[in-house]
Length: 317
Image (cartoon, rainbow, N blue to C red; front, side, top):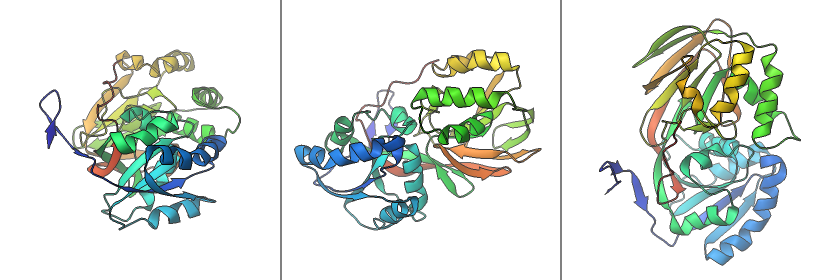
């Protein structure tokens, strides 16, 4: 077990090879970006000298079957060519207790898990981690029994995520900004009741999010202090504010500057129960997961995910 620069134990295993890779491509990721990058991967893997088999999914169910077909195959890594939603589907397709070794070639619209772990955006560099990176033990969050990798959102940001997932022309950060502006006009803050092992809250809120990672929404740094390796989540509560104030706050979320606002409350927890006065959707990794009330928890070191040897710089507000 290695130690990082602070002296804390670093939960990762150096790579031992040779490895065989089961590459599962989601052609629909990133409005077709997955199809374009997936077509290039055999040549990239050949140049890197990596043994691999390549599978292109045709439907969401087919994608799940391709992941499930790996379960129990020792000596293989699952390489997901897709975005945060594809990784979410892969996690949900794993049998309970399966600590698979996974890797990510990011080609979605948000790619927030890759951003949080420092996985390069370029396919060649991301694939290169399979030879030069490490297998890092990563936490997974659960809404009920449905897993998530990044941030589970309730309230305004969940509605924005749902709206953004339906947009097909706009890409990148802009899709979330446009979706936020469209949702803002008719949004009414729900009343939340939060009970956790460290924090209680009751009252109206614009949004309540449970962060296993710093980023969501295509690069919004909602929770700069979050880590995918510490066994805890950050409960983030944004208190009610005027629509004009929210519009002013929104750009600051991309840099983490919103954390200085007195209307932003955070608390670390391992599990929480959240109820609302009216049903509220819960979204994570760009996917709808459930509707309130919900129980949310973090499972520490649930999977191993191929990542750079050095951790990404700590996000700063």
